[in-house]
Image (cartoon, rainbow, N blue to C red; front, side):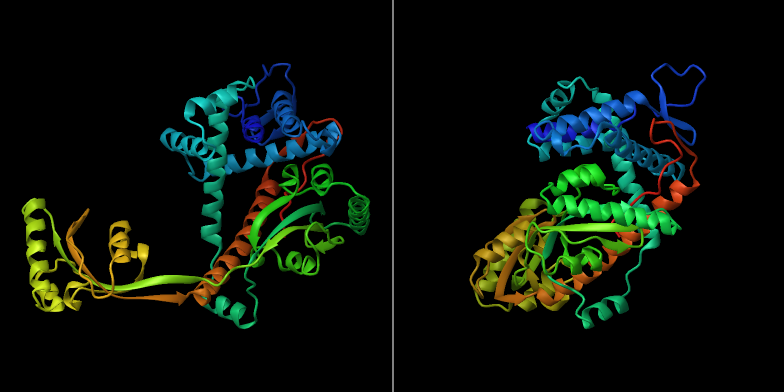
Length: 440
């Protein structure tokens, strides 16, 4: 429960007090620490978010950077959230109250909490339920914005898939990586590159000397997931940048690569764990069926009686295919003698899956009902198929799509930030905001 509460606290802390604060002459003495286009971020918002991080790391406070650095990182995240929500609003990306309720209910189910327990977990920390709802809405809107941007900018062609497969570019299995980024601004000068290189080398040295990687990420990383300890989670080999996969190829679990130069800075990659993909064997069935639909004209009892009579005739020796062509009301299979082809157990729904799995080859089922009517089914065969090649192709498509999506959305965020007016008033961090940092 402690981990869940920390996550909820941090999520709620990022929410605006109500609607986004507007720049008004009567702004309270709370204090403005950043101006983002027409909106402001208040000191109280930042303090609340920082407090959430401190609660999250209460058992390991030494992993947190100094207060000033933590504030800078949290403020960066607040700015990016504000910019994305504003862009979503300007492009018509919305989320209704009902959709927010559904999302919150899902969060509760995933954590074995009902709505009352979830609300109590939030309010127990002195945080507002409305603030939590606001954050859920904003995070969901950001996800929808990302989907819209990716859908309009990312295309994966069959030719790209074939090239990737032909060149052996798809590695099966998954990696769990840690990531630290020492970012470089666009058009970095030689002095800035040297300074970033020196910082990356220093971070690498501290990790080698025993500093926890997650603590180093929180303290030094410029990536958007820095406050998560740099954990990228489980990803397919080819869902991470090729340079990352190459960097950990010869590493053991727990080891960290030397600094790698990338287009947006210097990266340190830790191999947390890896797992291989097993051969993808699936069970398929070959069957045929006859369907009698229920309707306003044909009652449930009438359809049941008709299918029972058809089954009696099949068992008496009449040809199944002939009866299917004569009586079946399934437009897709009727003219084929009821032949459903080869399919995986769930291919025709749970009712058919339960029936076909229990039959022996050539056995005819008892009449059974689905939401469209009454059926009788005969299993013709069963086989085990290796779908590894199909999976590899799907993996290639997904990998290319994920890689392009990450790159395109990172470019989108850079553009959004470059076009925005951002004034940072946080002591020690004045002078404007940095470009958003990605993982590529």
